[in-house]
Image (cartoon, rainbow, N blue to C red; front, side, top):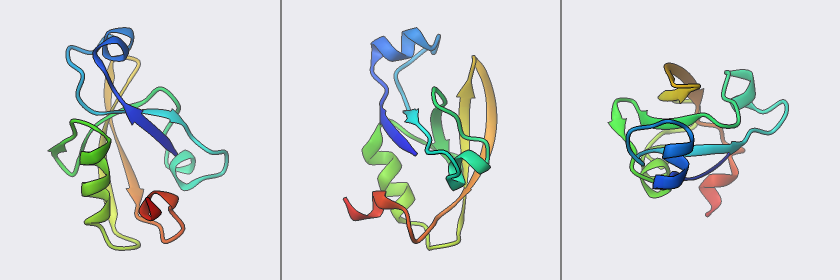
Length: 97
């Protein structure tokens, strides 16, 4: 899964009131994120109830998790809120940044 910061222009495009969270710019076929329902164009606004402002918030929250630990992501898709559960994986490339 690849993410990017959600600026005011992107927030407006996705009909969001503010530019908070991160945009899922792509989801790799067969990945854990795809299997759990994450899609390109989703906006992750919080993890485990902690609001996300940007990628730095996402990575800080993600890195707090242990391998195999669940993360409950609040997502906005097509103007509708939903929850997606992801697991911290040892093969995630984001941890190597």
